[in-house]
Length: 336
Image (tube, helix red, strand yellow):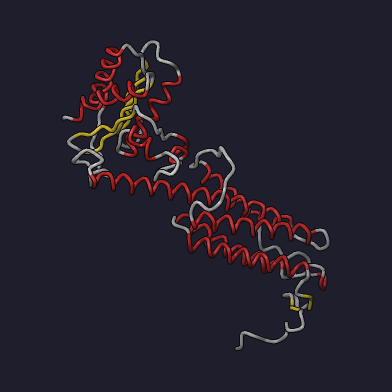
């Protein structure tokens, strides 16, 4: 069977009801743009680096085929009525997916400029194509019956594509961090013995955690600076914490985030500062992990027999004082 039929050579096409209309008809323009959105999403799926993103986009492509089929029927022709193929459950799925992804992302603090990665750029291209389809559907709804659910679907879909673009950038950043950490391990940037063992954390119990806290507290006392001191395990879970008398309230959260950062990256947070500067290989990492990554000194990884076991964070003094106190706490158990 030939792909071409020559029936459209005169500038007309057929709806699914058999009705002949112009190729510039509002309904044809609408479902043609839906088809265009599906192709743009296909490009985004091909460029996506994350499996979750690819799976979501693949499901959306199937739903857009249904949306196009729904639009290809003129509800006024022969009294056919609105044939709804996109249903409220599809809208609910979009909303649930948006909520699930947003819960894992840091808050937005500035306007988003597309193009940080090919995947990010392609998702924004798909998003704006969906927005155009939504505008055309709104126009079509003024002259012909269009399911309200269909309008809701395209509105939510553009939101999901926006969130997916942020998700892709976030996951790309996490992958970049991991590569950088491994690279530093192989080049000697991380203490000997940790390379190749980062994914196999040693056990850090409460006794060891309090030994590190005690040593760090002694150092802070010797410096005459009241601090908040935190210990987390290799998974970033808080094991021990103390706020010395006189330590500023803000130091509580900062000390915990420093410990989390040191455990997650396996490096002192002071080393991260240079990497996170504009133009650096980890620029922007501070916005990942819901803002818990700290890119200044005062956090130090904890290792047992050379294996990453957690992190210690100190906050309340100058950056140099925080680093000195965190290092003292780390040395309390590093030698074990």
